[in-house]
Structures are given as C-alpha cells and as structure tokens.
Length: 432
Image (cartoon, rainbow, N blue to C red; front, side, top):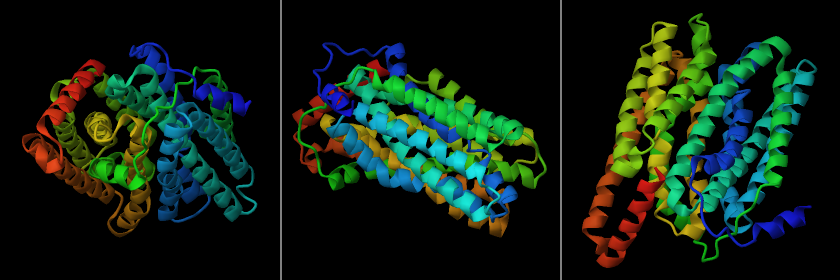
C-alpha cells in the first residue's frame, strides 16, 4: 500500500493548475484537522495539569509548549520530506502521528490517578507526537495545495491555510472544554482519534502531485534567507501564544468565567479579518501589510494587559486576532520568494518553525514572569515582543528597498532582478 502511494507521488502533474477557493480548501482542510487536534486540549491542559494533577503553573505551561519542541525540531525535516518524497507522504505521516497522539492522550486520561507522574509522562509523550504530526501534516498540506493550484497562488493558499488553522483552534478550544466538562478527558482523546484517522483515509485517496525537480539548497542557506522573516513572525506570535497558553489561568486568577471564549474571539476575528483583507497583500505588498497588522495586534495586547473585566479581555483578544490575521502570509510571501521553487517546502517548514519557537518560549518564560509579577504581566511581555517584531519588519522593508535600488549589492544584475520582481508581483496579485 505504501509503495503504491510513493509511486503515485511522482506521477506527472496536472495539465493546468486550479486556484479556485474550493480546490484550495480541499487541501487546507487537512490543516484544519491537524489544528483541531491541537485546539481540542489547548484550553483544558493547563488547568488539568495545574489544578487537577497539582503541578506548578510553569509546568502546566511547559506541557502545552513541549509540543513545539518536537514541532521545532521536525519542521525542517517535514519540509525536506515534502520537497523530496512528496507532500502527500508528509500529510499521511502527519495524520498518523496525530492519531497516535490521541491514543496517548486517552492512555494518560485512563491512568491519571495511578500514579500522577505516569499520567503526566504519557501526556508529555502525546504532546511530543502531536508536535511531529503538526509539522508533517500542516507543511505537507500547505505545499500540496501550492503544488496543485500552482506557485502563482502561493499567497492565496497560505491565507486560506491560516483560516483553516485558526478556525480549527477557535472551534477546538471551546469544544474541548465542553467535552472535558461533560464527559472527561477521554472524550477529547476519542474525538481526536476519530477525526485524524478519517483525515488519513481521505488524504490517502486524494490525487498526488509531482515532486519538483531541481537543485536543493543546503539547509543553512534556506535558513539564512528565511530567518529574519521568521524572527518577525516569532515575536509577532507571542501575543497569541500568551493568550492560548495562559488565558485560562488568567481568568481563574480573577474569578472570571468564559476563558475559552477569549480564544474563540481571537480566532473568529482572525478569520473575518483575513477573509475581508485577503487581497491586501497583493495590492500593497507583504511588508506594508505586516506593519499595519502588528500595530493593530499591539493595541489588542495592550488592552489585554490593562483588562479589568472579561468583556475588556474579550475585546482585546478580538483586536489582537484582527492584527495577527495577516502577519503569517504577509511575511511568508516575502520569505518564500527568496528561495527557488524546488526548495519551497523546506522554506515553508523553516519559516513556520519560528511560530513554534514563539509557543515553546512563551510557556516557560511567561510562566516565570507570571510567578514574579502576576498573570497580567504575560501580556506586557507580549506587547514588548510584538513591538520588537514591528521593528524587524521595518528593517526588512528598508533592506528590500535598498536591494531593489542597488541590485548589484545582492550579486544580481538589474534586468534579472527586475524580471524576478515583475514575475513575483503579478502572481501575488492574482492569488489574493
């Protein structure tokens, strides 16, 4: 069976690409499943570890963030798998890993009192496996969509993929809370297993696309080209990372109800803003859009920091969602255009690693900050980080203008660079 899948992966590509929303959603829906598996336990694990198992708040944050250790380490590998073996193979492996994570979560729930450390150990193993599944599944699904639709639709695929991602998180967080409250953690695990196994079966029968032939750049070269944009993404993502990891405990510390709705507000605002402004990257360019978004996000995080009521926190989360909505695709389009097409899977994998860095670092660092200064301080930390991201984007924008003005500084002749820019700009406009 596996051999048959691999042989199909190298089949000739379709005669024409299809950039319609319906076609692209057929691939980004696979990312939806991956992030639904992530979102289901997201709002319940900190409280489960801290209040039910009795561990410190920093360890509760680490249990959430540990997933991103595995994701961080496996993202580049997932990109290479997608580039060299094919996006379909990456997706199938990713869905298998997500299904396994659900099985481990079920085991952790079954032994949570006999003894506590065993449940915590299995829970951490589940998070690590889920991290690998995220990198394989989401990177493969994104590249599969780009390869099937055509590289001229890169911006559109990345944008719709983000809608799927945050839509799944917005749905998964409150759904996970409802299931855990009524039926226990086991119900969350069972739903994860069922959905991810069904997605595996669906992906197995989808038409693969050919692996792009060409020279693959060394990993260090791809990393060097993408890293500045990734650093902006990582710092810009601290606002969401802090909200997702600590909003439950932040609400509990103030005796408020409705913490999961804060995540829903963020996710809903994120999706609405992305759908409304999806054309802005093509019209204005990646860097101008990223600047505007980071300014709005910083205002939202500022409101969260000063929140004195659940409704104020709710509005701050929504505003932050609007701001963060286009940061990933805006910087992503700028990052991916810096590498040849046959390296785009690796570039996407490396670029997305920096979002994972944001999640991984926020857990333990913000946990320590909370221990010293209280729960609201996590949003001050996020505000400082988002403003730092804004500074990086301004610097990258100035550097790009300098390269266009003085192409010889980059070792390119003017006609070649001009041809590249014209070719890149037109597809971005069409895709958005």
